[in-house]
Length: 148
Image 1 (cartoon, helix red, strand yellow):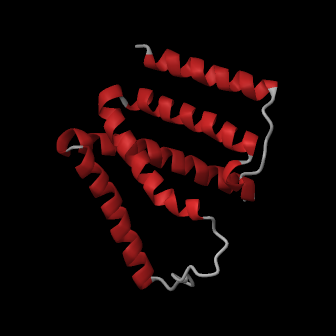
Image 2: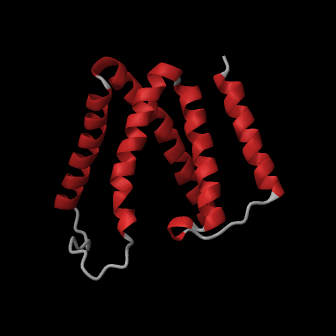
């Protein structure tokens, strides 16, 4: 099977998981509250990863001395909390499609800025007219989905 096709399938699986997880987190938020939803979501993931590290051999070295990883990369877990909390909070209040339309539009816009300016070590990709038109279309799409 073509490697690119497999990568596309993995990315699609991730997208499906995000949407389904978002709905589940919205149900948890509605029934338990935002903080509790985030705790359960992150807590279960942490338990699973801890068990994985215990039972599956790994070459991961927890010593970070001498690493070339920039300090801000270590904030990814905190950003994950923002993602989980914002999705948990917004889905029961806006609906799944509206909340994710806004989330995805924000992702596209910030990734364009990150690529445009090469922030955080990203490979640069200059803004073109076609990309700009695409982003305007995304913003119009958010408006159409969210206007009810």
